[in-house]
Length: 209
Image 1 (spheres, rainbow, N blue to C red):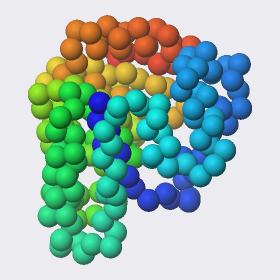
Image 2: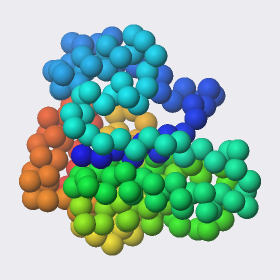
Image 3: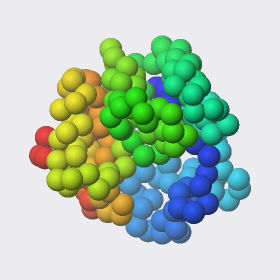
């Protein structure tokens, strides 16, 4: 397994990364994944880092080079991002299952976006397609205010990726979707079992897939 973290600087105004009060409710959450819950609870007692998460992902390869281009001139950011993603692909080239964790999720391939420093929070469609080529990829996506609502948004991206895919919806709090591209039959089965196990927290397959 490989993980592309899309590591972007913390933003103090939004509180991302500090939603950890659920770890004070083991009676509600620990049974869902005891080993993971205990590990997360332990690492939040000290300073957290990507490396602190890796022990629970046994054997995982991590690509955690920062995707922050804030110190790069707008004119140079396109080439910088291309080189950054090439390094990600090289790091994860031997992985048959990969996970990408962009802060905001998938976005279209409009060229003007690449000149913005906030582009580091997004994963353009072309990168998602490239990461999933010849293997299964799981892509995190934070649902937006896109016209038509979240169902239409998920349908849109499933249609755009151009390959077999499932979408796992998690809507108990802020709405999130995990796109699973090129899943094998075994992975599809495990996804369905996972959704059933976590259904109490409003985790489900999109559209009755």
